[in-house]
Image 1 (cartoon, helix red, strand yellow):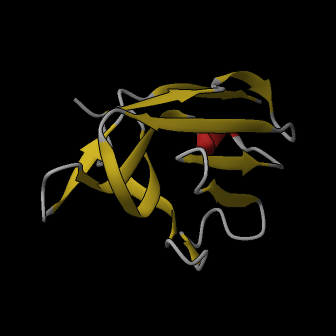
Image 2 (cartoon, helix red, strand yellow; image 1 turned 180 degrees about the horizontal axis):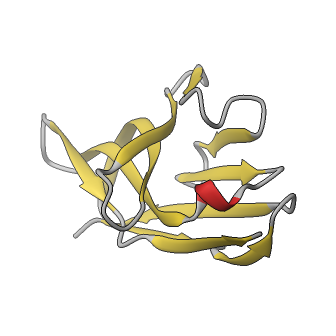
Length: 121
């Protein structure tokens, strides 16, 4: 059984910072791309940032130059450093990863349960 568990959400004032973390656990053979998504009430889930196994990154325009995604392949973790937070960043943030479990030849997409980020003005 594979799990992705996020942590680090909370309430912060506009202009502040938060660091989200996501740890993958279970019978993992390898992990491909890892991503952070977010979903605000009434909105569709949107891709915030993605990082490949090699460390290449890509960001949504709305968070470029403010958010930084990173990963630790030895610990099966991905993080999202969020600076200069704005009220419009308020959302539930979800970790997502392409995972290959032990004994399988296929990569599947796994999701975490999410962590709430609230930015007050």
